[in-house]
Amino acid sequence: MKGSHFAFLSRRQRRSGGLAGLLYPLLGACLWAAVIGYKPVVIVHGLFDSSGDFILLQQFINESHPGTNVTVINLFDRSSSLQPMWKQVEGFKEAIYPIMQNAEDGVHFICYSQGGLVCRGILSTLSDHNVQSFISLSSPQAGQYGDTDYLRYLFPQFMKSNLFHLCYTAVGQRISICNYWNDPHHRDIYVNSSDYLALLNSERRNPNSTEWKNNFLKIKKLVLIGGPDDGVITPWQSSQFGFYDDNETVVEIQHQDLYLRDVFGLKTLAARGDLIICSVPGVEHVFWHKNETVFHLCMEKWLV
Image (tube, rainbow, N blue to C red):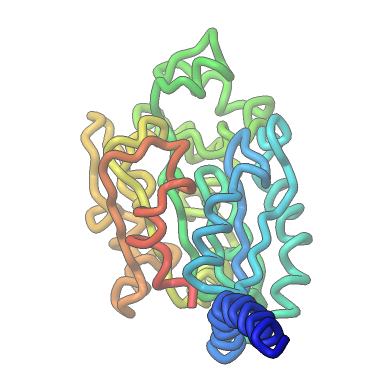
């Protein structure tokens, strides 16, 4: 009888020990997260995406930084992402602001594709934001100019060479992609017609340019992620503020006028050591937020 009782206790102890072996590391991770205090992460999606497309990225964040509060903003999904950029900026701003207010130590932004330009609009116009790291994930920060599948799907009757006829009109400026369409062969029309990117870049007269620059420079890190095999962002260097000249030769960020004149703070960020450029080959556009290597190489360390 004693022997069977002892055996029962041993089995129960083994089960208990196995359960403890599973629970203790998890509990330790949660306590570590509480001590470290990982800042909340806000994710803003891109053209034709929705919040459900970022499950893997959320998983990467929570595996590397357990307990992190990750929010993918569920706004302007799918075809609604074609709405004007300033409308999206205001909508996302309204959704994100309460998250900022509840985060005493600030938040991090991961903004993918078109979402990276939405986030720039938020950071430029919101004077009391508390964004620490702004991670721009394959976003056309210097604009878009290319015959891509997206272009053929949206505007089947146009090519890159003649899309300016639509984009640089009042009607065209109601479509998000036209708000950052940057035709290097029609710079004057772009500057005078672009209601979004030309204003953010202060290429068009903007009475708020100094205020917007000061707001943008409140970020602690700007991380620009892109790569030569993207296939959508054109040129791919636009994800790092490079762009075409009028011969369609790419001029890198450090030689761009908006950098040299420090129009909205890029040169200041670089001088502070807060401008990080991360280039990864072999990644197609739709896989940036699903690629674990990209996460560990370009994002993980900036999310503490």
